[in-house]
Amino acid sequence: MASDTALRLSMVWLAAVIVVVGIWTQSLKKMMVTYVVGMLGIGGVLLPDWDFFDRDFSRWCSPVTADEREAALAQRSGLRSNFSRSSSLRLVAILPLY
Image 1 (cartoon, one colour):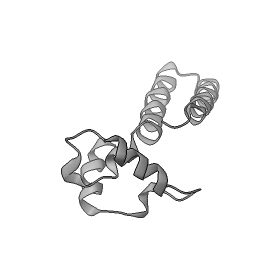
Image 2 (cartoon, rainbow, N blue to C red; image 1 turned 90 degrees about the vertical axis):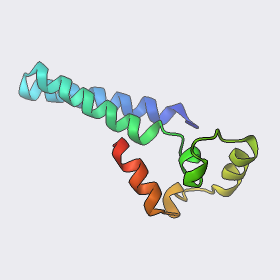
Image 3 (cartoon, rainbow, N blue to C red; image 1 turned 120 degrees about the horizontal axis):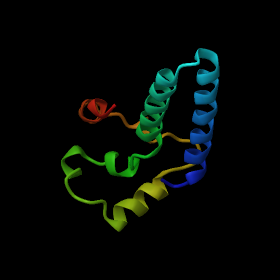
């Protein structure tokens, strides 16, 4: 992950949501469900190495080389999303992770 700030900020917001759910419902079970769902959501969105998954599907079994990482960093610009190039095979392979 390029910046831990987004991870920390999202975990703080999740803690605030858990406190609100706990106060509102007064249920420890619902607080725990909120925590688990929130952490899975944070882990699924922020933690994956998108440079790894943005390669051709056949290359997923081999590690990312330094040249590939540099090319991915050079290609990335501003607010452009890594998902601009979509592949149906990539979508089918990543979707079960969520």
